[in-house]
Image 1: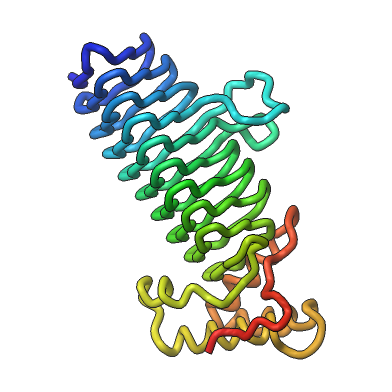
Image 2 (image 1 turned 180 degrees about the vertical axis):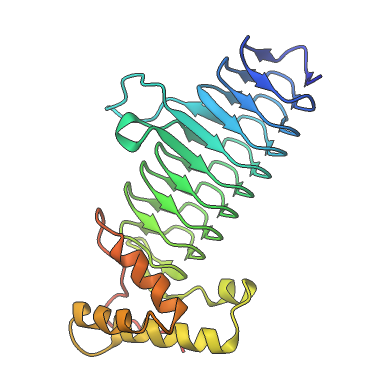
Length: 268
């Protein structure tokens, strides 16, 4: 039987695994689905068509599954899906999707959202993403796996951030960020590759050398950006890094591509 504190309010219809724990003063809506081992510590609000994956831990004053902050939302039956083994700290928030965004907000497995961080409607967050304090995503943002979002960074709606990126604290992201990109600044610009993260994920020296060479040619090589992209595209058959970056760029449509500022020196 789920362990439910006497002060918690769980609406009839909520689906709770047998070992779910719901702490003091939590509220759980009728369409909520809590998988095995989920723990809501206290004062947690979970509403809407929200499902939370196994062993996810939610800290006090988090609010999940509330309506999207969108003037276009008219009460459609949309959803929020949160993966397994996540940690959602105090005052974190995540909204359900909208009909215009295919109706679902998704947060992957093993995601850590530190205090005050926010996932807007229709976002897709990959596995093992870390949000530092007060990192926020506007609607329709996608974030690739193993990305780190620094404290108080803000991501513009419809922006895509590739896997294994590093977004520095206090950075405003208005443009798509290539996989493994390192972005810094109020008007975020590329300052190189997330080399530390790449090493942690098992990149060899040879692979890092290859990635740096592709990065330099794409952003600092001769010719127009279009011609440089064509050169990198020609490398995709022999370079997995080039293939990943080109594939990401080719899938873009809503936002421009984040690039280095003029005069920025590429990484050695």
